[in-house]
Length: 409
Image (cartoon, rainbow, N blue to C red; front, side):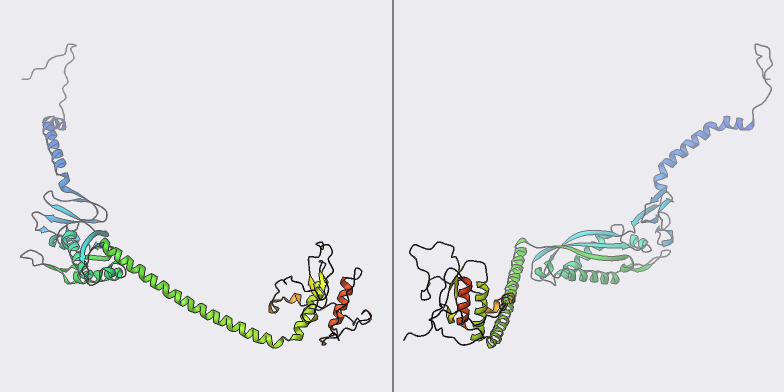
């Protein structure tokens, strides 16, 4: 019999009973809390072993501790993102993106020179061949397979060339040969596994595992003495080439001068056929008339020039010395004539004809003189020209009679 305590105020106690769920929670709440704490602890401890996150560009190979080891089926590879596995299994990640490594290799050339070749290899893995690669070689396949094999082929190729060829001209050829040999070796080597009962067997070529993009030879390092000798040899080679071009240039210059001399010779032959003494006298008359028409001060010596042409001297504004006599036709002047322009170089504008024809000046000839007429080159004689120049240049001051060319009796 259960006793109920009456309240002080005299109200009777409640007669309702609690529900089943409340009674269950009241009875099992401590056990539920304990189970949740244990599960949470287990989840925290096993989370790193059960959850695998595969990064971008990589693939995961599953290894089962109690399921036969490496799973070779490419369809069971763990793709990018979140993946759940049993805590006793493992996942190995492989990079499927383009990879490269740089490695220096020591080699000896065909002439016995020790050198160092720096090689860059760029490659990529095939997705379906990653499980086989993991089982046959492992994650450190670069150091185990790629680097030693390429180093051996690099030394083999460099041994076919001299140090100078490897240093200068044959680098591209060496690079192509190394790549061809690597591709050939990859096609020959196989990854084989004879599976026992319950295991898978395979025979996969290495060329089906790697995609080789290129092999670059970025540098050839030779001893300093060898490099200096190669540079000196190259310098001497280009010096010799320079002298070759100099000789060729002198030959071309000789040919040019020969052609120029032939042209001058032909010009002189052509011009000499058309130039006569009469033509030269006529040109002298034209030049004399043009000088006489200029406004500059001048002195004209009549009858003292070559072939009877006047001589015109400038600078007559300077005062004459005391007691001096005017120049006569017999006076020999020591003044040097200025340089004259060659006939063939005389501009065409300077070869103008006189403005008018000069008539014979027989009426203006002073009395008592009998000038001798020279050979007739034109209707105008030399005596007429001398008389005309005298009247035009010295009309008021003084008139000089032309000297007679007759020999004294």
